[in-house]
Length: 549
Image 1 (tube, one colour):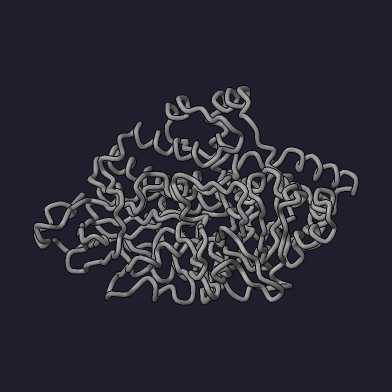
Image 2 (cartoon, helix red, strand yellow; image 1 turned 180 degrees about the vertical axis):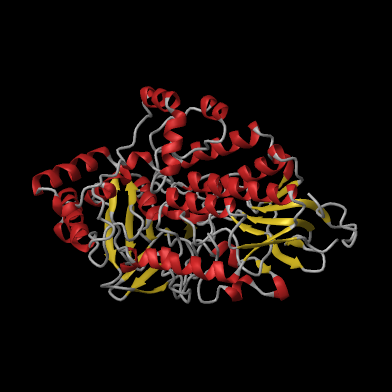
């Protein structure tokens, strides 16, 4: 790659690469493989954790499990990799997914180009050389022509913003930073704050072993059964026999999940009995497919209300105490406007005598005390408190790195009113800085493995194209960026996503701009747009030679 190596202006202490990748999750691992093994470039990964896996390295809380069927939530780039890995469950748990990540790292010998326990502090674009200068928290300095942020969409954990946080003298845990060896809650009095996906999975898993569990719920969540179990051999055989067709269908679909089996009919155009049968069939099947029962569930409030009514009745039928069932039923937003949770017996937990629910909208937390939690109604004493309060999604990990582009412009400042990107891939004013599944791309509204592969392949092809043409710099134009952001907002405005205070809009982080961040248009449509941009000589980007280093 012209200009990447032999940068004489750098000090002897600086490490020099063609590309630097931040993050060794699935995105960072595949990016390293593409650049190093397929293209022969020098690439290096900086990873804050002590191992590969990203989200699945950090999220080891009890019950952590994927909400997409295992064979679909896996890499497709290597047929041999698919053939020699065998999933054991329909929805794999965190230990198995982490084992898979390590298998990928071993198979492609990735660790030799990954620095673990190394957190990036800053990434500064130097206009004089056209290089990115990366500094780590332990003082290492590296330069590269290309800087690729594979930092993950759900990797910046929120810290408790509750009065008294830190005063509790008992055991304190966060689902985002769970101890590696696990925790024994047998016979203990435990309080857990939060009923998002991590909260639901933790609650379901620890409820049978604790002495007492008090769930502090700020907002109830819609959750559907996974009906998880061992992965049937015939499913594995079918997947491998039709692998190419299934993978192609994933890439061209709406969200990259074949198990959705979306219907094209409109909800209210279908007779009531047939509609009910469709909902029942999908509830029995389990997983996200319930939300794809009809084509207008995400855009028509009347249609959505039909599904809300169905799920509400399911909750009432499972939870024996009517008052508890009512508190567990969402009433302030459409189903699917927040990420639908997939559970393994969540609502059933509230039928246990040792589990109780506190509705924080009725009795809010006033403070954390030395012995537990005080609400407006009473004090609760605990042996342990668990914070399941989620993430600063999509932008949080980037915001925690000092990223500066042309003229010293900080990404934090450019995004002060919300993230601005072109295709979720690049940012105007930040040449050769790529984002993998960044805001403005399908990312969290899709099967992340499908979106990761698409982004990594596009970035790799782009870098190869530049090298073949002896070009060194690519940068999104302000006009293309503005048009894309407007398009992302326009598409989102036509859906029901805007009717929920969700982490899709940053509503879970105090002070964060309320902007809908992912692209709702679908992975197939988005892929076509990205391919079209590349085919049209990277339309919307400026390509140039960088100054000689």
